[in-house]
Length: 283
Image (tube, rainbow, N blue to C red; front, side):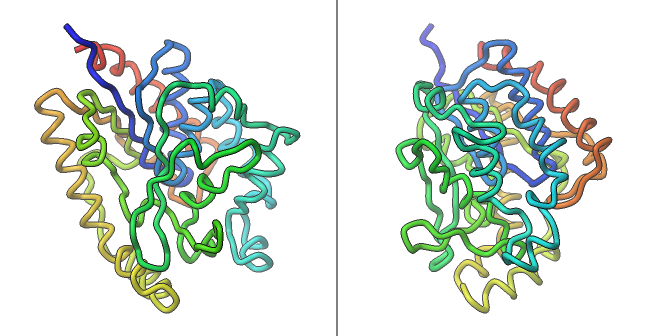
């Protein structure tokens, strides 16, 4: 029997994304790999460390570095118009001479494909970056994918403003299917049966629309896109094509707020959930 083509999708979700960090640490411990990794928002950061083979690197970012005011703070927002300082995260911390360098050479050498999802602010379109858009100490596409609207100003790449990939394609299951993957692991950071609601996006969408109307419209419709893609994943799960990993609670975490107890609990949930991956990929 021919080997099935495999993919993993991490949808991100701010501090809740430590769930994915637990998933991928267990994958690294068990030697589990995928042919293609799709990262959205903080999910792209998780996958970068997974592809570079750096065990518990993301755990350190969520539980240690994220508490620093240089990393995320109201002070950042007031002085730099960005709550999470992505230049600090991917510069001072992740550069080759940083405090916790991303092993770019290992990431580059990894044979797996890597897709990073972002939203082009000017027209609201989905942009799928790949590994060729990365370079040593140039992690702009990861920054772009994690640029939460309103909390962060758009991230500029070659003069083009980008926003969080979760606005445009929050759960790229359809894309993975269209690209021919037969076994897809989907890492969610909300409970699998919780529908996303529009009401939380209404105010930020209206604020965003003042400058970027098309992106504001996409944000207003994000709930529908998310719910439709999760529904598609559930249908495919019944056929054995998709494995959905999701926490049974949020442990008190939100996109931009956290507690150390909640972070550790969510990490453990991800680590335990990953137990199902090996058998699924071999099925």
